Amino acid sequence: MGEDGYDKARAAFLNRKVQRFCTGTDKQLASLRKRYAKRKDVLASLRQYEDEIE
Image 1 (spheres, rainbow, N blue to C red):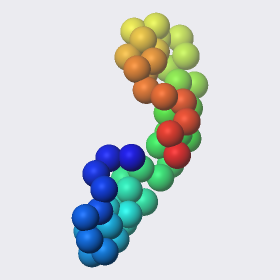
Image 2 (image 1 turned 45 degrees about the vertical axis):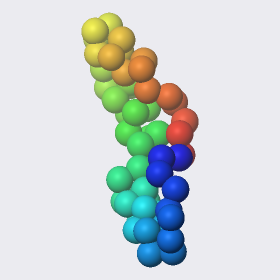
Image 3 (image 1 turned 90 degrees about the vertical axis):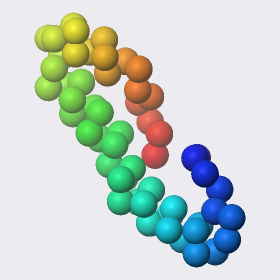
């Protein structure tokens, strides 16, 4: 996943950012797909994202 931490401090920083910005994205994507189920244009855009990345 992304960049490797080249030292302990950088690895810790990256882990914090992943937890902050990436946790919950699977659930958010599922929610968007449900919310816009009747909008083919929106669903087409959402298809570019993987269902489960966490």
